[in-house]
Amino acid sequence: QVQVAESGGGLVQAGGSLRLSCAVSGSIFSFNAMGWYRQAPGKQRELVATINSVGSTDYADSVKGRFTISRENAKNTVHLQMNSLKPEDTAVYYCNANVKVRYYGPGSDYWGQGTQVSVSS
Image (cartoon, rainbow, N blue to C red; front, top):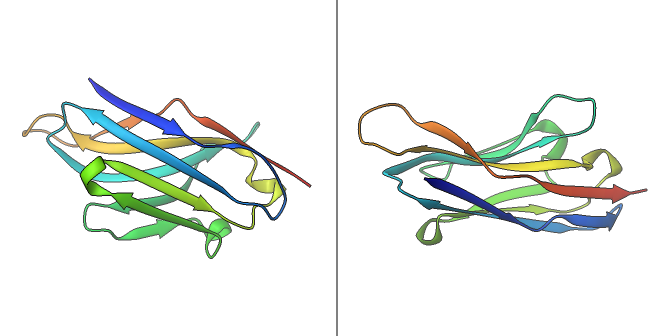
């Protein structure tokens, strides 16, 4: 019912940049927040960046000053601009949308399929 479509990702050298995009569609009443998470092999999924319904952002300490999350409300799209990439940024990046699909009830999380980001040293 809710579709999360990601694009971007790839293989870059350390110090390079990538821009991830995530478009959300389907039967949605309202958006609470959108964000990006990542999971490296052998590690738990971790928050990278989030943006809420009024544009307030939150970042993991490890990416502050390098990554920027932004949104295009009219297109239900969120972007993650990643600059000064490091090998430790290598992970599968997942887009998350916390939305209400019905007026009554709490928001629910919907996830994209993930996109691989690989940074070589």
